[in-house]
View (cartoon, rainbow, N blue to C red):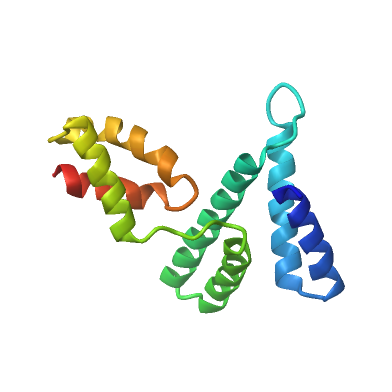
Length: 149
């Protein structure tokens, strides 16, 4: 069963169990996936990796929105975003710890023999495919800056 089919099945389950947060979150995510499928020249079916990228993007939106609501002193809206984020995190692979990211970055830096910030792009190019979906780009970039700085 593909990830998209799993999302659809879980949406049906959430609707039947009257879980409004899960149902609304899954509906929005499936809508984003559909939008991605029709974007461009021709309609196409997304692969599981592409669906995972859409879910990751949606999760990032929820994290950012929760932080913005916290800053605006709107805890009820921040909690709502965090509840949606919790639903989405159930479909994402386990996130890497900072130590794991640092180890991958150190390996890439050693592989390239990089020793200054001008090599940041090359290091990121090596590390990104290994980390895809398991850590936010900002965390990875910070680790690369620490390793090269």
